[in-house]
Length: 248
Image (cartoon, rainbow, N blue to C red; front, side):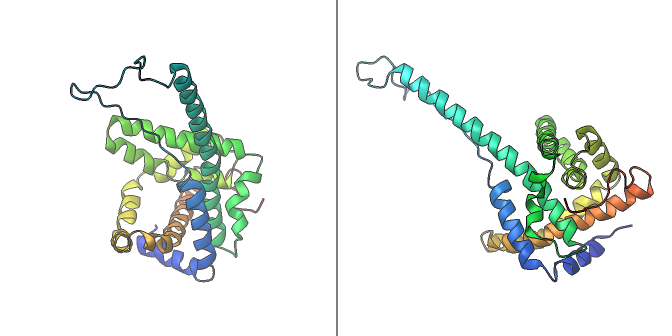
């Protein structure tokens, strides 16, 4: 049975000899994964007092065909940026999970962050991680609570994909559901236990989060390790499916 204090103690112990390497990994991951998503919003306001100019006004010097062409180009660019973001961020998230799992038991290199790009299961990782985000978003459309529940239910998917890049998407989701069954509230309380740190990070205008993130990620790796052991004990899986984080 895992406890919050045990996970945090183990996380601190794992970070003792490689904190600054973990810090660099988190910075790179934040730039390539967390910072690689872009949102595009167009707002059009029409009111009786501020009507838009008519396209065919004699004052118009911008042909409709040119405007349409620019719109299409911008749309294509936006789609390409989004696609690249998905291809990079999904693999990086799994790679970060892999790094912190390797770092629990050894001197993991920063290159572990990019290991998912080299595995033959890269496209499977991208697909599964994309579906994870899509499913969580769709559940969030129903109400906020279902989306939160699903985010906890699928929380371990990046670790599962990092450990076995060739596992099917359906099986990865199934395993994550089984491993978090009966644990979601405990995981929520674990997240809540960092609220004091978040307040301090807020006081530093978010700069403190850069230094906190390695601790958070190390704690999450300890959580996966504990729930993974529980899954083995319950015969949800075995070492033929989750064969530990052996270097590629």
